[in-house]
Amino acid sequence: MSEHLLEVNHLKKYFKTGKGTVQAVDDISFTLDAGKTLGLVGESGCGKSTTGRTILRLLEPTDGQVIFEGKDIAKLKPAEMRRMRQEMQMIFQDPFSSLNPRKTVEELIGEPLKWFKVHKTKAEQKEHVAKLMDIVGLAPRLANVYPHELDGGRRQRIGIARALALDPKLIVCDEPVSALDVSIQAQVLNLLKELQKEYNIAYIFITHDLSVVNHISDDIAVMYLGQIVEKAPSKELFTNPTHPYTKALLSAIPIPDPDLQVEQIPLKGEISSPINMKRDCHFAARCPYATEVCLASTPELVDRGNEHFVACHLF
Ligand code: SF4
View (cartoon, rainbow, N blue to C red):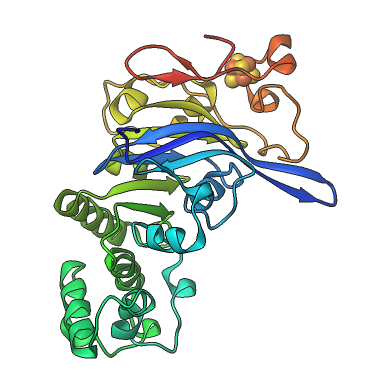
Protein backbone atom coordinates (compact mmCIF):
# COMPACT_ATOMS: atom_id res chain seq x y z
CA MET A 1 0.00 0.00 0.00
CA SER A 2 1.21 3.50 -0.87
CA GLU A 3 2.57 5.51 2.08
CA HIS A 4 1.36 8.69 0.37
CA LEU A 5 -2.10 10.15 0.85
CA LEU A 6 -2.39 10.68 -2.90
CA GLU A 7 -0.51 9.09 -5.74
CA VAL A 8 -1.16 10.22 -9.31
CA ASN A 9 0.34 7.88 -11.91
CA HIS A 10 0.53 8.72 -15.62
CA LEU A 11 -2.80 10.54 -15.49
CA LYS A 12 -4.32 11.54 -18.83
CA LYS A 13 -7.49 13.42 -19.63
CA TYR A 14 -8.27 13.85 -23.32
CA PHE A 15 -11.37 15.43 -24.84
CA LYS A 16 -12.58 14.58 -28.32
CA THR A 17 -13.71 17.65 -30.26
CA GLY A 18 -14.75 18.31 -33.88
CA LYS A 19 -11.22 19.60 -34.55
CA GLY A 20 -9.36 16.69 -32.98
CA THR A 21 -8.30 15.46 -29.54
CA VAL A 22 -7.53 17.97 -26.79
CA GLN A 23 -4.76 16.49 -24.62
CA ALA A 24 -5.70 18.57 -21.58
CA VAL A 25 -3.74 16.41 -19.12
CA ASP A 26 -1.05 14.35 -20.79
CA ASP A 27 0.71 11.80 -18.61
CA ILE A 28 1.39 13.47 -15.29
CA SER A 29 2.57 11.80 -12.09
CA PHE A 30 3.17 13.06 -8.56
CA THR A 31 2.58 12.18 -4.92
CA LEU A 32 1.19 14.21 -2.04
CA ASP A 33 1.46 13.46 1.68
CA ALA A 34 -1.03 14.28 4.44
CA GLY A 35 -0.80 17.86 5.67
CA LYS A 36 1.32 19.00 2.70
CA THR A 37 0.65 21.35 -0.22
CA LEU A 38 1.50 20.87 -3.86
CA GLY A 39 1.25 24.07 -5.89
CA LEU A 40 0.18 23.44 -9.48
CA VAL A 41 1.19 26.45 -11.55
CA GLY A 42 0.84 27.49 -15.16
CA GLU A 43 -0.94 29.79 -17.58
CA SER A 44 -4.61 29.51 -18.40
CA GLY A 45 -5.14 26.47 -20.65
CA CYS A 46 -2.20 24.44 -19.30
CA GLY A 47 -4.48 21.75 -17.84
CA LYS A 48 -4.06 22.50 -14.13
CA SER A 49 -7.80 22.82 -13.35
CA THR A 50 -8.60 19.73 -15.43
CA THR A 51 -5.94 17.88 -13.42
CA GLY A 52 -7.64 18.91 -10.16
CA ARG A 53 -11.08 17.90 -11.38
CA THR A 54 -9.85 14.56 -12.76
CA ILE A 55 -8.16 13.75 -9.44
CA LEU A 56 -11.50 14.31 -7.69
CA ARG A 57 -13.19 12.24 -10.42
CA LEU A 58 -15.46 15.12 -11.32
CA LEU A 59 -14.07 14.20 -14.76
CA GLU A 60 -13.36 10.58 -15.66
CA PRO A 61 -9.67 10.00 -16.45
CA THR A 62 -8.78 8.84 -19.97
CA ASP A 63 -5.90 6.79 -18.61
CA GLY A 64 -3.66 6.49 -15.57
CA GLN A 65 -4.33 6.05 -11.87
CA VAL A 66 -5.38 8.21 -8.95
CA ILE A 67 -4.61 6.33 -5.74
CA PHE A 68 -6.12 7.97 -2.66
CA GLU A 69 -5.44 6.36 0.71
CA GLY A 70 -4.26 3.25 -1.13
CA LYS A 71 -7.39 2.91 -3.29
CA ASP A 72 -7.59 3.44 -7.05
CA ILE A 73 -10.56 5.81 -7.22
CA ALA A 74 -11.40 4.87 -10.84
CA LYS A 75 -12.25 1.38 -9.60
CA LEU A 76 -14.57 2.49 -6.79
CA LYS A 77 -18.27 1.65 -7.04
CA PRO A 78 -20.69 4.63 -6.81
CA ALA A 79 -21.43 4.06 -3.09
CA GLU A 80 -17.70 3.81 -2.27
CA MET A 81 -16.96 6.90 -4.38
CA ARG A 82 -19.67 8.79 -2.51
CA ARG A 83 -17.98 7.93 0.79
CA MET A 84 -14.60 8.90 -0.65
CA ARG A 85 -15.99 12.26 -1.81
CA GLN A 86 -16.31 13.33 1.81
CA GLU A 87 -12.55 13.13 2.12
CA MET A 88 -11.74 14.96 -1.13
CA GLN A 89 -13.17 18.45 -1.44
CA MET A 90 -12.75 21.48 -3.66
CA ILE A 91 -12.60 25.25 -3.20
CA PHE A 92 -13.48 27.24 -6.33
CA GLN A 93 -12.06 30.43 -7.80
CA ASP A 94 -15.25 32.40 -7.91
CA PRO A 95 -17.12 31.88 -4.66
CA PHE A 96 -20.04 33.96 -5.91
CA SER A 97 -20.90 31.80 -8.90
CA SER A 98 -20.36 28.58 -6.95
CA LEU A 99 -22.86 29.60 -4.22
CA ASN A 100 -26.64 29.50 -4.61
CA PRO A 101 -27.66 33.19 -4.25
CA ARG A 102 -31.03 32.24 -2.74
CA LYS A 103 -29.52 30.49 0.26
CA THR A 104 -28.24 32.06 3.45
CA VAL A 105 -24.73 31.56 4.80
CA GLU A 106 -26.05 29.03 7.32
CA GLU A 107 -27.91 27.08 4.64
CA LEU A 108 -24.95 27.11 2.27
CA ILE A 109 -22.50 25.81 4.85
CA GLY A 110 -25.08 23.25 6.01
CA GLU A 111 -25.62 21.82 2.50
CA PRO A 112 -22.81 19.22 2.50
CA LEU A 113 -23.84 18.14 6.02
CA LYS A 114 -27.40 17.67 4.73
CA TRP A 115 -26.34 15.83 1.54
CA PHE A 116 -24.31 13.33 3.53
CA LYS A 117 -26.89 13.10 6.38
CA VAL A 118 -24.23 13.87 8.96
CA HIS A 119 -26.69 14.93 11.69
CA LYS A 120 -29.96 13.48 12.94
CA THR A 121 -31.46 16.80 14.02
CA LYS A 122 -31.56 20.36 12.69
CA ALA A 123 -30.25 21.62 16.01
CA GLU A 124 -27.12 19.45 15.70
CA GLN A 125 -26.51 20.70 12.18
CA LYS A 126 -27.02 24.31 13.27
CA GLU A 127 -24.45 23.85 16.00
CA HIS A 128 -21.97 22.28 13.54
CA VAL A 129 -22.47 25.17 11.06
CA ALA A 130 -21.88 27.70 13.86
CA LYS A 131 -18.62 25.93 14.69
CA LEU A 132 -17.52 25.96 11.02
CA MET A 133 -18.35 29.68 10.78
CA ASP A 134 -16.23 30.31 13.84
CA ILE A 135 -13.32 28.25 12.40
CA VAL A 136 -13.25 30.24 9.14
CA GLY A 137 -13.77 33.61 10.86
CA LEU A 138 -17.37 34.37 9.89
CA ALA A 139 -19.23 36.25 12.64
CA PRO A 140 -22.40 34.54 13.99
CA ARG A 141 -24.48 37.57 12.91
CA LEU A 142 -23.80 36.62 9.26
CA ALA A 143 -25.65 33.28 9.53
CA ASN A 144 -28.82 34.65 7.95
CA VAL A 145 -27.38 36.94 5.27
CA TYR A 146 -27.13 36.08 1.56
CA PRO A 147 -23.85 35.80 -0.41
CA HIS A 148 -24.48 39.02 -2.40
CA GLU A 149 -24.48 40.97 0.89
CA LEU A 150 -20.87 39.91 1.60
CA ASP A 151 -17.49 40.92 0.17
CA GLY A 152 -15.35 38.47 -1.85
CA GLY A 153 -13.19 37.44 1.11
CA ARG A 154 -16.19 36.49 3.25
CA ARG A 155 -17.78 34.64 0.33
CA GLN A 156 -14.60 32.63 -0.07
CA ARG A 157 -14.72 31.86 3.66
CA ILE A 158 -18.16 30.28 3.01
CA GLY A 159 -16.54 28.15 0.27
CA ILE A 160 -13.80 27.10 2.70
CA ALA A 161 -16.32 26.27 5.45
CA ARG A 162 -18.29 24.11 2.98
CA ALA A 163 -15.12 22.30 1.95
CA LEU A 164 -14.20 21.72 5.61
CA ALA A 165 -17.65 20.53 6.69
CA LEU A 166 -17.02 16.83 6.07
CA ASP A 167 -13.50 16.71 7.61
CA PRO A 168 -11.66 16.16 4.32
CA LYS A 169 -8.09 14.89 4.05
CA LEU A 170 -7.52 16.56 0.68
CA ILE A 171 -8.79 19.87 -0.71
CA VAL A 172 -8.20 20.93 -4.31
CA CYS A 173 -8.06 24.73 -4.18
CA ASP A 174 -8.67 26.01 -7.73
CA GLU A 175 -7.40 29.61 -7.95
CA PRO A 176 -9.01 30.30 -4.54
CA VAL A 177 -7.65 33.85 -4.16
CA SER A 178 -7.41 35.04 -7.78
CA ALA A 179 -10.71 36.91 -7.63
CA LEU A 180 -9.83 38.68 -4.34
CA ASP A 181 -8.10 41.97 -3.55
CA VAL A 182 -4.43 41.58 -2.57
CA SER A 183 -5.03 42.38 1.13
CA ILE A 184 -7.85 39.83 1.33
CA GLN A 185 -5.75 37.27 -0.57
CA ALA A 186 -3.25 37.28 2.29
CA GLN A 187 -6.00 36.74 4.89
CA VAL A 188 -7.46 33.78 2.99
CA LEU A 189 -4.01 32.24 2.39
CA ASN A 190 -3.21 32.57 6.10
CA LEU A 191 -6.53 30.96 7.00
CA LEU A 192 -5.81 28.02 4.66
CA LYS A 193 -2.36 27.60 6.23
CA GLU A 194 -3.79 27.67 9.78
CA LEU A 195 -6.46 25.12 8.88
CA GLN A 196 -3.85 22.84 7.35
CA LYS A 197 -1.78 22.95 10.51
CA GLU A 198 -4.79 22.34 12.74
CA TYR A 199 -6.46 19.56 10.73
CA ASN A 200 -3.54 18.05 8.77
CA ILE A 201 -5.27 18.64 5.42
CA ALA A 202 -3.37 18.19 2.15
CA TYR A 203 -3.91 20.83 -0.53
CA ILE A 204 -3.46 20.86 -4.26
CA PHE A 205 -3.21 24.60 -4.79
CA ILE A 206 -3.90 25.55 -8.40
CA THR A 207 -2.87 29.01 -9.56
CA HIS A 208 -1.45 30.96 -12.50
CA ASP A 209 0.50 33.13 -10.03
CA LEU A 210 3.86 31.81 -8.81
CA SER A 211 4.14 34.55 -6.20
CA VAL A 212 0.94 33.33 -4.50
CA VAL A 213 1.90 29.67 -4.52
CA ASN A 214 5.29 30.35 -2.94
CA HIS A 215 3.64 31.28 0.37
CA ILE A 216 1.63 28.13 0.75
CA SER A 217 3.36 25.25 -1.09
CA ASP A 218 5.81 22.61 0.11
CA ASP A 219 6.38 21.51 -3.48
CA ILE A 220 5.58 23.23 -6.75
CA ALA A 221 4.84 21.59 -10.11
CA VAL A 222 4.93 23.84 -13.16
CA MET A 223 2.57 22.74 -15.94
CA TYR A 224 2.73 23.55 -19.63
CA LEU A 225 0.20 22.21 -22.14
CA GLY A 226 -0.92 19.23 -20.10
CA GLN A 227 2.49 18.18 -18.80
CA ILE A 228 4.62 18.88 -15.72
CA VAL A 229 7.81 20.53 -16.99
CA GLU A 230 9.45 21.18 -13.62
CA LYS A 231 8.77 20.04 -10.06
CA ALA A 232 10.73 20.78 -6.91
CA PRO A 233 10.42 21.79 -3.26
CA SER A 234 9.16 25.36 -3.20
CA LYS A 235 12.41 26.97 -1.97
CA GLU A 236 14.52 24.97 -4.43
CA LEU A 237 12.29 26.03 -7.34
CA PHE A 238 12.59 29.70 -6.44
CA THR A 239 16.34 29.64 -5.79
CA ASN A 240 17.27 27.35 -8.66
CA PRO A 241 14.63 27.54 -11.40
CA THR A 242 15.85 25.43 -14.29
CA HIS A 243 13.26 24.96 -17.03
CA PRO A 244 13.12 27.94 -19.46
CA TYR A 245 9.34 28.16 -18.93
CA THR A 246 9.70 28.39 -15.13
CA LYS A 247 12.35 31.08 -15.59
CA ALA A 248 9.98 32.95 -17.88
CA LEU A 249 7.18 32.78 -15.30
CA LEU A 250 9.58 33.98 -12.59
CA SER A 251 10.79 36.83 -14.81
CA ALA A 252 7.27 38.23 -14.67
CA ILE A 253 7.13 38.56 -10.86
CA PRO A 254 9.18 40.69 -8.46
CA ILE A 255 11.56 38.50 -6.41
CA PRO A 256 11.66 39.78 -2.80
CA ASP A 257 15.26 38.63 -2.16
CA PRO A 258 17.73 41.02 -3.94
CA ASP A 259 20.50 38.37 -3.73
CA LEU A 260 18.49 36.00 -5.89
CA GLN A 261 19.65 36.37 -9.45
CA VAL A 262 17.21 34.67 -11.78
CA GLU A 263 17.91 34.73 -15.50
CA GLN A 264 15.29 36.92 -17.15
CA ILE A 265 13.43 35.22 -20.00
CA PRO A 266 10.50 37.27 -21.25
CA LEU A 267 7.50 35.08 -22.06
CA LYS A 268 6.58 35.77 -25.67
CA GLY A 269 3.62 34.60 -27.73
CA GLU A 270 0.58 32.62 -26.75
CA ILE A 271 0.32 29.08 -25.42
CA SER A 272 -0.12 26.74 -28.46
CA SER A 273 -3.30 24.80 -29.19
CA PRO A 274 -3.63 21.63 -27.09
CA ILE A 275 -5.34 19.83 -30.00
CA ASN A 276 -3.54 16.88 -31.65
CA MET A 277 -0.19 17.87 -30.15
CA LYS A 278 3.01 16.48 -31.66
CA ARG A 279 5.59 14.51 -29.71
CA ASP A 280 7.85 17.57 -29.41
CA CYS A 281 8.69 19.87 -26.51
CA HIS A 282 5.40 21.75 -26.31
CA PHE A 283 7.24 24.90 -25.20
CA ALA A 284 9.53 24.92 -28.28
CA ALA A 285 7.61 27.64 -30.15
CA ARG A 286 8.25 30.11 -27.29
CA CYS A 287 11.64 28.90 -26.05
CA PRO A 288 14.77 30.93 -26.87
CA TYR A 289 16.93 27.79 -26.57
CA ALA A 290 14.93 25.49 -28.86
CA THR A 291 16.96 23.30 -31.22
CA GLU A 292 16.06 20.54 -33.67
CA VAL A 293 15.98 17.90 -30.96
CA CYS A 294 13.27 19.91 -29.17
CA LEU A 295 11.03 19.61 -32.24
CA ALA A 296 11.67 15.90 -32.59
CA SER A 297 10.88 14.48 -29.14
CA THR A 298 9.16 15.27 -25.86
CA PRO A 299 11.71 15.63 -23.03
CA GLU A 300 11.08 13.39 -20.03
CA LEU A 301 10.84 14.64 -16.47
CA VAL A 302 14.26 13.74 -15.05
CA ASP A 303 15.44 13.88 -11.43
CA ARG A 304 18.39 16.29 -11.16
CA GLY A 305 18.86 15.70 -7.40
CA ASN A 306 17.40 17.58 -4.40
CA GLU A 307 13.97 16.24 -5.46
CA HIS A 308 14.21 18.61 -8.40
CA PHE A 309 12.69 17.24 -11.62
CA VAL A 310 13.03 18.96 -15.00
CA ALA A 311 11.75 18.07 -18.49
CA CYS A 312 14.08 19.82 -20.93
CA HIS A 313 16.59 18.56 -23.51
CA LEU A 314 19.10 21.14 -22.27
CA PHE A 315 19.69 19.05 -19.15
FE1 SF4 B 1 13.41 24.83 -24.71
FE2 SF4 B 1 14.16 22.58 -25.90
FE3 SF4 B 1 14.13 22.73 -23.25
FE4 SF4 B 1 11.88 22.66 -24.62
S1 SF4 B 1 13.39 21.04 -24.51
S2 SF4 B 1 12.35 23.99 -22.93
S3 SF4 B 1 12.39 23.85 -26.41
S4 SF4 B 1 15.43 23.91 -24.65
